[in-house]
Length: 212
Image 1: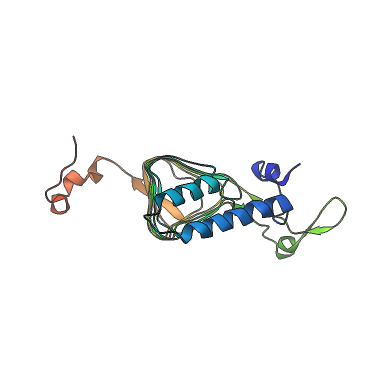
Image 2: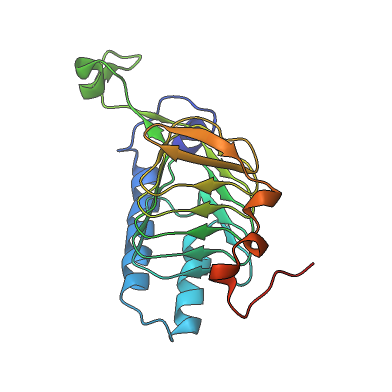
């Protein structure tokens, strides 16, 4: 079984597998290429992202710098905004919906490692050879989510549509849709509802208004 197939099935795999190393080296190179561009080099940036990511919708913008581990394992919807210093360690699949906003220094991770130190160092293959192994679980983020600065999303997490994740949170478990969650580990503080509308904040709205 190919190493990528093992990743997608949630099985142990070797990060040193030659095929995986080639994918990662390419993703690291493309990430660095993107980070060398200016914001107004839109065509160059678009070409890099098309080669780097598994899919991206129209209107999505990456401020940069960005770092993707595999790149091809990440799919992003349309009209998303990613602020400075996005890191996506996408050994397993990372799926992000439409119209999401990410603050600075957001990190998404999918790999997992044994808890026992010796087992992190090596496990034995079928021939008794020592091999350094890990496994990975996917991350799924719905549409219309907002992530504050310095949020970390851990492996095997699903975040529903319309969620707000407070700055500095570490998300270790699923968050249901339309929830405000914060903390380390993040917990649901409350459901987001009508009372959160900007129309109830006239001192902030100024001359603007909420569409009815």
